[in-house]
Length: 119
Image 1 (cartoon, rainbow, N blue to C red):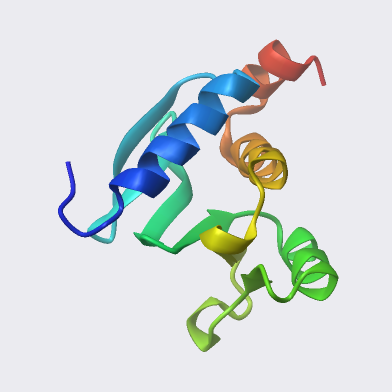
Image 2 (cartoon, rainbow, N blue to C red):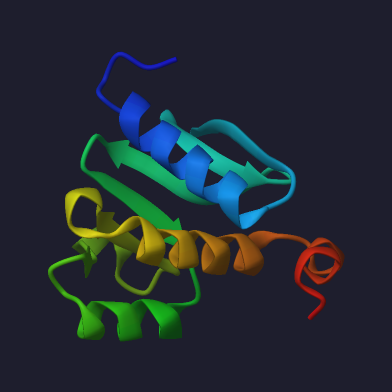
């Protein structure tokens, strides 16, 4: 699908999303970049082989950047926007899996999230 080095991150994200049981996840594009979507709503954009952006609530973004600035950061473009950039080489699969779930929950229709997680 890609010749830009994003195949490995795409596979990693797909594997983790499947392992978490995230429903109705598809791969598409967002602004020309590979993206994971739930019912056509983007929740992850693969920026390149080493970075992705997660669409999450701003208050979660601020907490993550403060908690682990080596992993999470934002550029000027993302200030005030509900998305955080993740450095893929520095994040464990366990943590990335949790962040994918958070992003999925924040973008999935409420009924779909309740169906999967019961709340």
